[in-house]
Amino acid sequence: MSTHPANGANSPPPPNQSSVAMIARQAIVNAQHMVVGYELFNRSRTGAGHTAATDVILVFTALSHAGTEELVGKKLIFVNCTHESLAGGHLELLDPDKVVLEIPPLGHAASAEVVARLPILAGLRERGFHLAFNHTVLESAYAPWLPLADYIKLDLSVLAPDQLAVLISYAGRHSQAELIAEKVETAQQYDMVSSQGIDLFQGYWFARPALVEAKLLPASQASIIQLINLVRKQASTDDIEEVLKKDAGLAFNLMRLINSSGFGLNREITSFRQAVMLMGLKKLFRWAALLLTASRSSGTPSPVGHTAVVRGRLMELLALETLPPEEADLAFVAGIFSLLDVMLNMPIESALGLLSVPDEVADALLRREGFLGDLLTLAEACESSDDAVFDRAAGTLHLSSQQINFAHLQALAWADQLTD
Image (cartoon, rainbow, N blue to C red; front, side, top):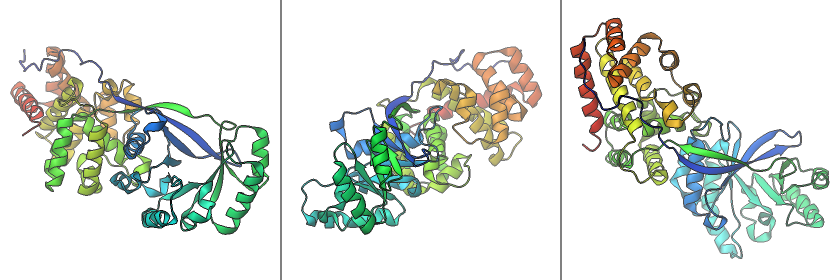
């Protein structure tokens, strides 16, 4: 009979609770009633709580959302902004072509303030962001902003029909912006604005805002802070990858974001090393800072996350007995993501749909097939102290009890070293 170290987890740990933000989305449709984009609203705050910080968290959560339903898919994202948030580094994490920034008016601001804010707006548009304004951009005080407008939103709840006609005519002569009629609530309103040439619409007549529980998989604040410190020191890719691999929430959130449509990559990323190298230190720092803002106050990883990390490291060490490092890395990926169903409280098939994983990883996680499937079966046997399954898996992999026990002890020690 084999002997192997116990890790204190004879049964799967309880589900990890994701951080949840309430986000509403409302469709913006064209004349054919096809959805062209969604405006996002943060329903986790009060209306008076709209700040630069809530803008940042809204966009970040929408792109990293770990639920079964995509918040925006490949549609445009319309995001309400404060002027303070427009200079935020979080915008560097986005694919500008997918994002429409809704720019608020300045109230009774003097023309000088309009001019002072012009360089920031012009810079965003040069980077590829789309800009949307409300009807006040057609006033003379905002003339410097008008050439930057990709969209102008006309609010039917505050504009009388005769005002609308004047504004539509003026916008057509003096800008290249597409007009969006918002707060469209009746067929009569729709007929009125569509007959005047508007072909983008938003309002209850088409769709009410739909509420989505947007989830982030929590990461340990200790891990996030360690990552931030390494990035600030311009540490090596190896050191940064090491931190990512020791926190399942950190690893999942990075892979989820970098493969989201909002990030704008044209190929799927399946390894942490690829993710770090493609993101670069500057964006990685921005991302880690945002994740720290959105994370809970807990300084330790969750039990299920810790189990996933140990499992991944154990599988990697055992794979290194026969495979080169780049192939053994897939064993780590399979191990750390093997508990996603528990962490996200959804079927493993749905959880894997949120990520891009190689076929051999998917085969292992869904059906325990292939070399990685055998490794996963062995790792699970180590946790459950199931000697019969342990012996069968070890025999299939041609690994001795001594090799497995030593690797398991190494994996447990490695996973506990979060602050070295």
